[in-house]
Image (cartoon, rainbow, N blue to C red; front, side, top):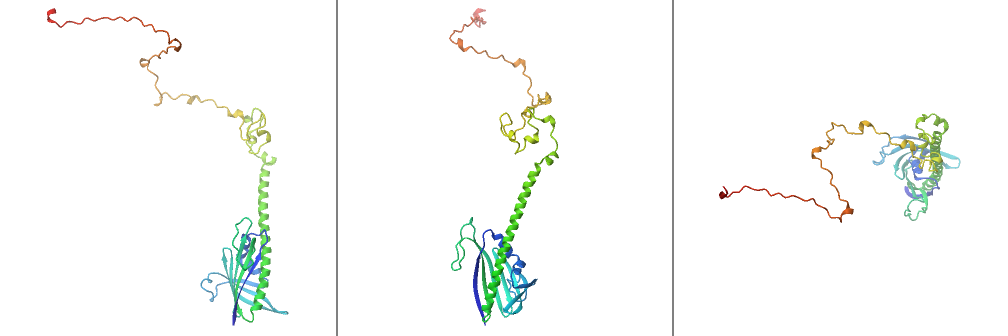
Length: 312
């Protein structure tokens, strides 16, 4: 006769551990198996015939546990277990001898200080702040062995969680140290590029392009973080990116491009003197009150021939 037992265990996670680190450990099946203190052997296998259609495509392992049945007597237990990764956790299904069937679900929950608060499930004692690891166990076992199996499972998984947390701490330290080393390498690279040894290997500037006031060559003046005297000091270059004033002189015009070619079809022809008119003479506005003297005009009456016949 079998009995079904369901229980939930929630373990708060210390500060400094991220979701990504815990989920990375949960999705590492070999690591999860090895963190269990009862396991002494494991290897991957194909899905057994008793696997359900939805579990057939999961990842299966054959595991051997070493169990203390009572003081002074130990035994080995072999069973098959399938692993199925979730977005926020892991599902396992264990098929052990004597009809022991264990479905286990690991999930990570909670909120960090910079995240919005989520509703807390009642009756489970979930922490209101920080992250936590939740384990939901659905177990079917012989009625006589239920108490022993539950006690052994809780003790083993408690040690597993402690090792998982410590492993997460180590992983976070490795990530932090790698980022720090990368940051220091970048800083050392930029500091070495400004060292005299590396700067001496750069091509020397052209002495003909030196500033007449002795401000230095182009590489020194165009540096974004150049000397302080190049940053708007009195009598110096007003801006760190300003080129020498001597180089801003306009180059002489090329005589080849000073006038358009005469044979160009767009060039304007010279004006024709036959059609040119003298400029109009503008009267001085100061003499507007003086009368204008007009020259006398002679009128001459022309005699037209008469058309009267009597005049003939």
